[in-house]
Image (cartoon, rainbow, N blue to C red; front, top):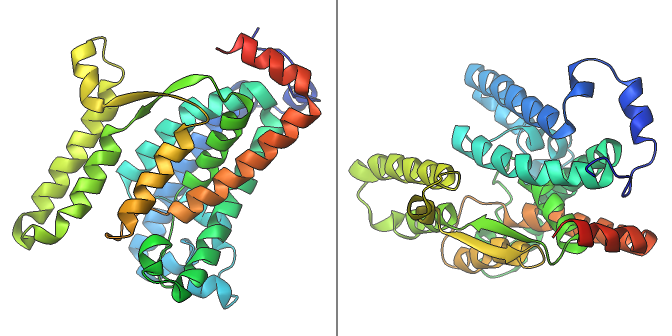
Length: 288
């Protein structure tokens, strides 16, 4: 049943044409490997010359001046740290595998890249708009802020699933989001001498929460604060609370990039629903 042709055209031809490891593995696996390799490469590059950050991370001020415009693409494959990389690849693994089965490798690749690039462009656009809005740099990010990560593309996947499979229920791991928000809400009241220790504890706790979701022990799984939601509600829960918190605390989270990727997913999902209504209906019956 997994090999049904829901929205795929020429997908088999694509597989036969390509050779090697990436043809035999899923595209999601390939994207995760590419993200990890790119992270290590950029990390070494920036370690040798910190100024290279401006040529990898997207910075609104630079892009609007016509400098390093390619960063709207390269920033998709760089992450702020190992934890940031882990969380994004964890999300990509689950969402990407489902999307790949639904729309096929070729469509999935182009969709992933476009959602990520649009996410970067939204970050640039809203940073510019934020100059004219009270506390705009808190909510949208500042002109000199830099952004990295695959989150824009991943929110594109989430938006697509929200339209194609709105009633399918998934678990959103709320625990890590709560820890991150609390970490920055109370960060101003924590003495500098212990802030490093608090950050380490928060990171360890988030890792435990993510790993707990796989535990056979139902009690241990609860520390991850899993919240069962239909796909249509998941993007709202993932974005809106962080935007509200961002009115008071400047979080290191590119909500505008998430929103940009989400918009791409919603639009493409609406297009597929209109073009393939019978297949979408069948898909919702199969994937409950």
